[in-house]
Image: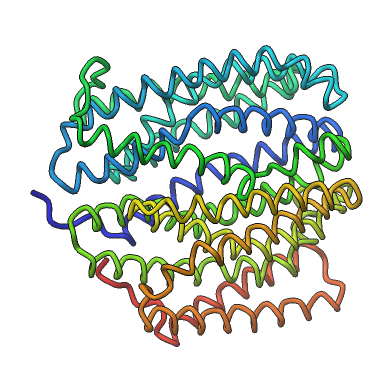
Length: 483
C-alpha cells in the first residue's frame, strides 16, 4: 500500500506548467478575437461562452470534482482498480446530464436570443449545445487523472492540444468563419482530448466499466457527496464565476459585456497560472491525507498551501493594480481603456477568491461540505442582490464591485473554521510576504507619475517581481518543505 502522496510542490509545479499552457493559449485567442471582432462582437462571443459554460456547470452536476475526490481516496487506500468502475459511473452520469442540458439549451436558444436582444445569438448557442457532450466526457476523464495526481500526463496532453486550438481559432477568424468557426474549433479539440484521456484511463485503472456497480457503501457516500457538490456548483457559478455577464448582457449590452469579460478573463488567467497551480493539486492531496487518517499530514499540507498561496496571490494584486493600464493598452489597445478600473477592482478581489477556493478544497477533502452549503446560500443571495442593484446603474464597474464584495464575504466565512489548522509559522510567512508585496507595489505605483510608455511600465513590473522573489529568499521564506 502506498504510504505517501506525491509531493505538493512537485505536483504544483507540473500543474502550473499545465495551467500556464492553457492560459497562454486562452490569452492569445482572447487578444486575437478582441482585436479582430471589436468590443461589440467580442462581447457577443463572451456572452455565448458564458451561457454555454453555465449550461455545462448545471450539466456536470459536480461529477468531475466528485471523480477527482474519490479517485484520490481510492488511490490513497490502494484500491486503484476500482477507478475503472468509478470512471464508468462518472461517464454515464456526466454524459446523460450533458445530453439533457444540450437539449434544453437548444430549445432555449431562440428565447435567449430574444432575451439578450441579439438574433444571431441563437445559432451560436446551438453550436455551443453540441459541444456539451464531449466537454462533459473530457471533464470526467481529466478529473480522474487529477485524482490520481498524474499531472505530467495532463501537461503533455495540453502541450499537444493547446497550439492546435490556437491555430484552429486563427484559421476560423481569418477565413471569415467568425464566432461560429471558433466555437466549432473548440469542439474539435475537446473530441481529441476525450480520445487521449480514454487511452490514459485504460492504462491507469482499466477501461471504464459502464455496467459494473460501485460497492454499496462507496456508492452511498459518493452520491451524498455529489448531491451536496451539485448545489455548490450552482453557488460557485454565481459567486466565483462570471454570472455578472448575464446581467450585463440584459441591462447594458455587448460592449459592457466585453469591458467586463476582458478583465475578468485576465484576472482569472493570472490566478490560474500561479495560485491555481497549488489550488489544482490541493483537493487530491488533502483527500489523500484525510483518507489515510493522518491529521498531522493534513495540517502540514494545508499550512504549506496557505503559505504558497499567499506568496503567489498577493503580488498579483499588489503589482497588477498599478500595471493594469499599461497591460490593457499593450495587449488589447486603447478601445478597451474602460476595462482598466474594472480590472483593478477584480485584482483586489482576487486574493479573497484564492483564499475562498483553498478553504473550499480543504472542506471538501474533509467531506465537510455542509458548511459550504450554509454559507453559500447567503453568498448567492448577496451576489444576486448586488448584481441587480449595481449593474443597471454602473455597468461593468458595478459588476466588478458586486463580484468583489461577494467573494470577500464568502471567503471569510468558509475560511474561519480552518484558520486554527494553519500553523503559526505559515501565518508569519504569509504576513511577511504580504508586507513585501505591498511595499514593492507602492513603489511601482509611484513610477506611473513619470508618464512612462506602457512597455517600460511592464518591464518595471518584471523588475518588481524579481525583487519580490529576491526579498523572499533573503527573508528565508522560500524554503521548500518536504510535502
